[in-house]
Image (cartoon, rainbow, N blue to C red; front, side, top):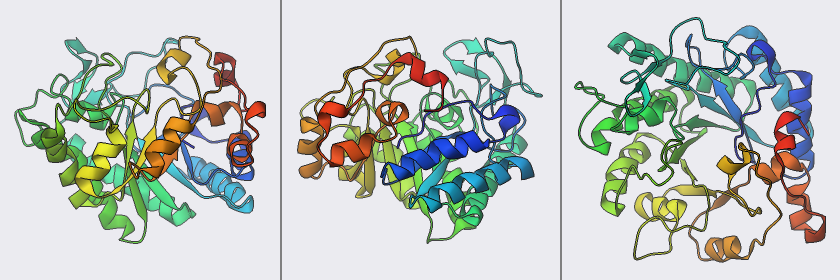
Length: 344
């Protein structure tokens, strides 16, 4: 199950309903559940008061209940830990207690809506990622995923349009701008040890530019991914809007396929699996119908990637995995925007 923001945790505290939501996926035979994004211990890490926290006694108690329910149902799970970085203000008018923060105060070209992080801010943020990962292991989760995609904080450091720094966390190349991510990975690996799986979710595209590519060619992708692999990443979760789209000219390999070829690491492919429409359109109200999995299977059987992340199809139907396993394709459900408004 791919991470999907739900915002059903008032004041950042996961409720029993959130625990039951994840338990239903474990009962439905999802192999590994990755939670919605959960924010780390920084004052402006979230742009919504109902985004779950992964810090503080009450929130961690809520997550303990979640993982206990998942384990009782025979499932495995990892939290996705997150700092949202510079954000647009929430439509409700809610704002965090401190201004948003990011590498250069902007979340897209020429749009400033927060503070430029100091060296002390960066150091504290790296430590907060480490504490969250350590808590995930202590609570009994099987792994942890870092959110480094989709225009949030780590991705804002990657992107030259939002990282204008002239210190060690900036630079003209993607390799230089990856230093913040590498330091986060090293800190997490330091605190959790070698026996706890570490995933990072990455995307080439930006929410403000779907056609953008951080790495323009395989050589540039190697300079981006290999330092993270060497720092301790076990699995690259390669986010695309449509998994079947090739990453570079001259090959039909998708993002996950190239990441595996370059790094040799385990990869997760994701993007409109089992549905006709892509996920960004879903937030604009576009519905999707079930679609064939033949192309996904062709690529997986070829060895392009190792795991498959399924988002909206499992959000709308906790029994999707079980139905696919049992060839009950006629019983598969589509996805509509109404599913975003409830914990099915």
